[in-house]
Image (cartoon, rainbow, N blue to C red; front, side):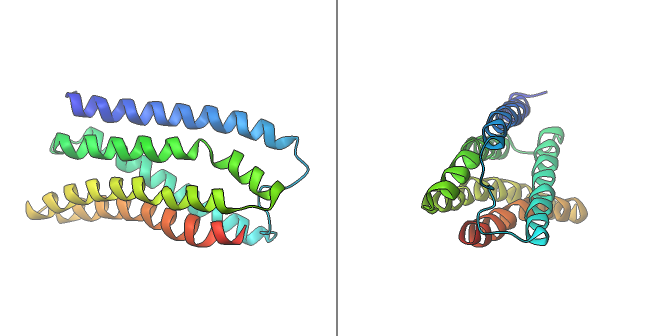
Length: 172
């Protein structure tokens, strides 16, 4: 494993352990609250949509990180850039549930909107880094792998931009 692969694996593991720990603490805190974190979203269908699209985007992002770490033809700066975006994105997510609960209780939703809007930037960095790699694969004639990489990069970015920021942050 070269240094850039190790850095990406370390960023992935640290971000996921940190996110898991933050969510465990926040979910325990939320359980005692009388209000739903869904705010004005009362439809079970809408809630399922948000959760399922989040799951697909999350799995695509993890798969992309693993792919970029595992392949030997990824430029080190691409891995470092992706790792930086990954850490920044998940660090922001540490605060999501607390801000969401506070917004539902107080009625002031601007902090959640700002957070979800800000999350677009590091996810965009991840997508851009992966896009650079996909383009290099395409130039070398590896179009099917390039398409997989591009899809795995586009799904999380589209989710964060459309579902999280444009839809959820203005509807909850």
